Image 1: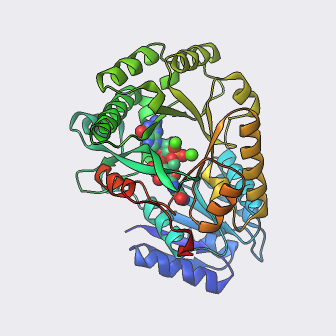
Image 2: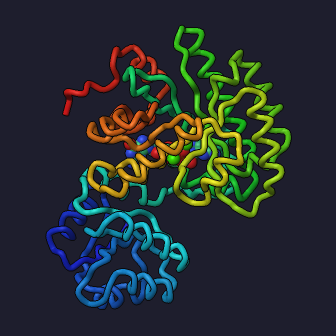
Image 3: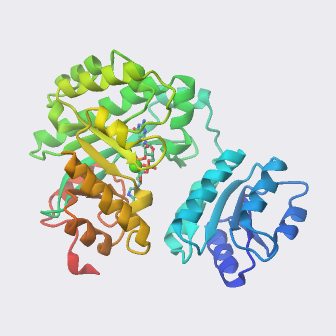
Length: 386
Ligand code: C2E
Ligand code: CA
Ligand code: CA
């Protein structure tokens, strides 16, 4: 059974987290100070640790350092009532320490959010390894879901983002963050991307034949961008599916700064010349920078969900989002906001002239058949719903 310790002196919060954890079959206990926690974990680390950054005997950051020194193997979630910047920097620090930082929770916490996070941290009975991923690619155990992208002016679906999933032999569905890094390190990413592109192009083509013309966004890995044959292969796959490159948006995250920049420029340039749209994903996190935006031939900026999700509650996130939208528009880029969960967030995005939105407010990633039902609606979100 998955084990968990909540390190927090605030009893009501700790009890709440424990209750939610138990509802998803996690064996959860509470330590109300760092000293107790370090004693309780002398022999074994639990699967998950939830740490409050503010505690009476020392602070959460000090505790993270001590956990790192004792080679903690738990997945760590940090919680705090402080603003999002404090959570962000604590998370980054944990990564620097070499800890497995698995998420952040800003108090007050929504039950659904906590439940989703904890569920995603329960290890699968079946192992995620290079060999099992290789086998999954051979056995067709990967599949695609599609998440609607909404035109904020018409409130209708204008496109979808294709998101890959892995169905394990025990039926468990593994999210991409748990296997894309393995695919990238092992070289399996080429086959994975081919599968994703082929499946999603075929789906877009089927939708078109049924009169549904949707912009299709596909995620490419930075590793794919080091392959000079990619532009020709994508163009050929596009032609085979009878799609126009204009209807395809390639979403890219810059993950490693050390990669060969000349090849990246060449590949991006050729993709753009062939007519594909290029979106810079997760902008504002990691290595993506304004300098890159200017240098590379992007057509769209995708604002990361870490800014968008809590925008209605945190002023800083709202300021960053609005600034990014203005900057993108001044640079002639279109804007997509991902992680739109609340109607208030959608209203602000409309007011700031963000063109497209994606998020749980409209729909989670779903099966292709459900996309057709969403497309049939005159409006995806009724603004009087909340
Ligand atoms: P991403 O490209 O940033 O994709 C958006 C992620 O945010 C998706 O998670 C989506 O389910 C989630 N999301 C969408 N709306 C909301 C919302 O309102 N609230 C919240 N909290 N989350 C929302 P998912 O599908 O687990 O994908 C995670 C990441 O895995 C993606 O992040 C992308 O970087 C990568 N990925 C997914 N599919 C592929 C793929 O086919 N190829 C490659 N190379 N990477 C992929
Ligand atoms: Ca994406
Ligand atoms: Ca993103």
